[in-house]
Length: 268
Length: 240
Image (cartoon, rainbow over all chains, first blue to last red; front, side):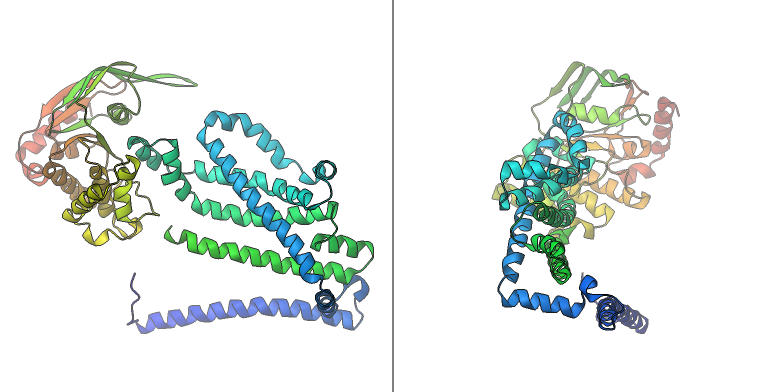
């Protein structure tokens, strides 16, 4: 589509209005953040709230600065980020493979359906003690936790995407004499790409839940560990700081996936 | 070229069995355009699935003169993530005949029938009529001997429908293909076919066969005084 250069005055006014609105939304977004942080800081400064319990933005900044200075900031961030990313990729890949298997056979789907339903509703944290005993107290246990938290949703979402492929297109492939594998490669996989992107978005959130939950149960380092440790020794600045870093990381990872989505799903 | 001999087909569901087609016999001669019309829900699509070998008859024999099939569906089913050109190459890829020569032939065919400027575009940039034309070229790309058309115009609006109908007929005649069309539209059948086979309600069986010999293209046929009388005959046979 070519961009027209000679817009009418009315259209120019419309464009201007739209641009203004976008700017307004962006400004308001930042303003909300600044206002919330400012209010928090002021309430703490004037002792309306107890900054020992509630911390404050300046104390959070100081704590993060301190972590950076003693060189442990990137150590903890790296550990949690590594666990989350590893768990995320394993869950998505494994989920995709299992979804392909379930897609290929209706019988298989029916056999596994009750198991998937039960596993989906099971609170994975219930498996905590078992995971520690089976996998020890290292990274593996935490990555395993991340995987089981996100895996079932990955399977279900991916499979739903596969099964939502247009019936007419399936008939077309069949009429051309395409087998299961060809249908999967030429039709089902590309057609379900938008759903896969949605799955990634959901999975990234769940992966963070999994890794932090894993660190709550068993860990020697990481952001989850800092939160638990900070809570135990009443260093609430540390809890707030770790939570803040988590917000930034989770938001960043989501934005990255949204970017990938924009690039991949352009043609849909 | 394609011959149905005493074909019956029954399909089974949890709640019972339905006889869709009973003792059906008709023939599609080489180079002919044959239409099958019948009341809605009489198992017309089943006939195409049988012809293409997607399902096998419960009894009876289908003789195929060793030809290959191309299937054209109600909706164009173009893949949005492929360009028009890549869509046209799809049957070549699926049938493992994706050679430079076949691709060149397919492109030549598309260019011949007015898709030249659209080859690199996405299907979503095409009008409904153009999309259906692209679907036809895709069907023709693998050089099938018989075209099976499953109400390929029914999803189009009326004006586009007339246009695409003429279009498809001329392309199929030009390329000297054999075609079997199922439709519920009497006037479409008359406009396009060399022969119209009329089916009964389910279980479908042949009520009558009519050769259509007047006029040389859909437009001429629609204008001919014989059109209305043929329409009446077919309408009465359909029982509507």
